[in-house]
Length: 214
Image (cartoon, rainbow, N blue to C red; front, side, top):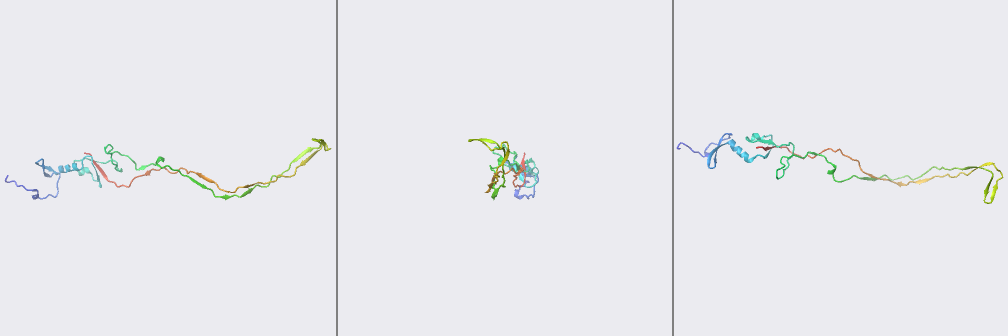
């Protein structure tokens, strides 16, 4: 034992880097042991990134290459946003929703479209028809006798016909006072719109998401 030289770590030269198979000294349960750098790193990775954890990258890095001895997979659903699962975890990794929606009548508040108005006031004044209607009546009769309350009367010219004509009469016109007036109107508009889908995508920034399988 006299030829063994013990040195403290502070007495050893400092290493500028470490390889996976380099050894380190540890005390485990009171016993001195050695451990490789790769085993130590894996132990730390398991403590920080247990299976099931999701991590984000702002690069195209692959955790399978960064953390040897672990298995990672991309979070499915490229282009989707993340929604918090329920407390029981029964809906973890479920997908749903849409970036575009179709608005139906049931999505709109109850409403209607009405319109009303009046035509312009215009006075048509008094209108008259043309003067017309003058006419006569003619009667053809025979001379003879006829009965009255005082007996029979004869004009002495039995059997001879004669014609009698009434005087002209009946010429007249009509006037109608239309007067200033206007008309009210009302109704409803016709259907409009094309039913195009509404884009409800929020502003976003994309990141790479991975979760540890094992």
